[in-house]
Each structure stands twice: as structure tokens, then as C-alpha cells.
Image (cartoon, rainbow, N blue to C red; front, side):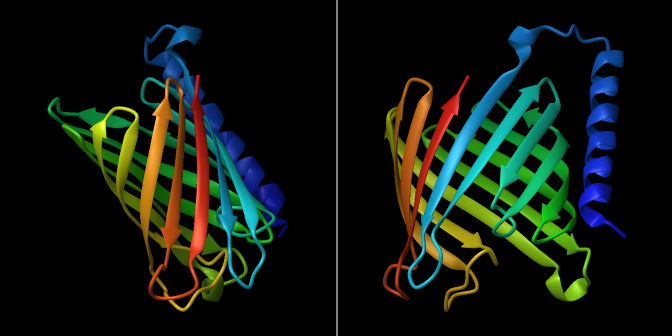
Length: 211
């Protein structure tokens, strides 16, 4: 079975169905209601290949679409569709169950989630997925990235992060890190130092632009 082709067909079917449901739900297809986010994550990995992980996401009402590269594995892409739930005011929750198709060096289907929880100046964000590897259960894996940060002012935040990945290996199965971030208008930047004090640190540099 040609899994890259099957994955792309599967993803296209999901996106088409979601878009049809969006139109039939009675919401006007107003382009101003769309929001987009372009992100780039650079990983400086000790004793291994450093790499760049770009992603692009789009939201329209409940509909969430996303494309990633070098996220599940090197030289591997993935496309995603999900349904966003929102609740709360002072304590606000945004949750998007998602389903993705993975193709490239790694191939398979991946259910997952994206979550953000805000309370005043504190934010918890988490993203996770379980990739069912097409080549067999040995290659299946749960990936996650979570952050807990505090923003004393709008343009600055600091906190902690944890990550689980098989894109690169370290002595720690779950990596821990500290992060600092800055924001200016629609642009945000952060640096995360993973494994500092436990092993040779991995550095993540991220840049996000919303439009």
C-alpha cells in the first residue's frame, strides 16, 4: 500500500468534509473571519542534526486546519483538521481535537489535540498526538509539547516546558526546559532551553506571526 498517497487522500477527504460542514452550518464565508498563524521552530541539537520545523495554521469559527514539516520525524510532513471548542471568561479554555495524516520518512494516521488554558497572566498550552505508524506498531509514538508561562507584562513571558519526541534522542524520554518569550504586535518570539542540568542542552528558537 502506498501510504503517502493514502495519507494525502485521507487528509483531503477530511478537509473537504469539514469545509462543506462549515458552509452548510449557516455561517457566512467571510474572509475576515479567518485567522492565520505561521510559525518556525529551530532546534539546535547537540551531537546530532539540527533542523527547522515550520508550520502554518488557519482557523475559521470552529474549523482548525494545519500543516507541519519535520514535526513527527525529519523529512516528514503532516496535515491536520480539527474542531475548536471554547469556554469561559476569566478562566478561558480552548480545545481542538484534531486528526492528521503523516507522510514522508514516517507514515501513518495521528489523532491528537491542541489545548490552551488562560487565567489572568498565566497560560497553559499543550499539544499532543499519537502517530499510528503504517510500518507497524513498533514505530508508533506519542508526541507532546506543553508550556506553563507567566506574563507580568503583555510583551514578555517566562515559564517551563516539557517535550516528548522521537525526531532526535536524548538521555531523557521526557525533556524539561525553561523558556523566555517576547511579543510585539502580531509577532512573538521565544527561546527554550531543554535538559539544562540533566544533559547537554537542546535549544529551541521559535518565531510566530499572526495575520
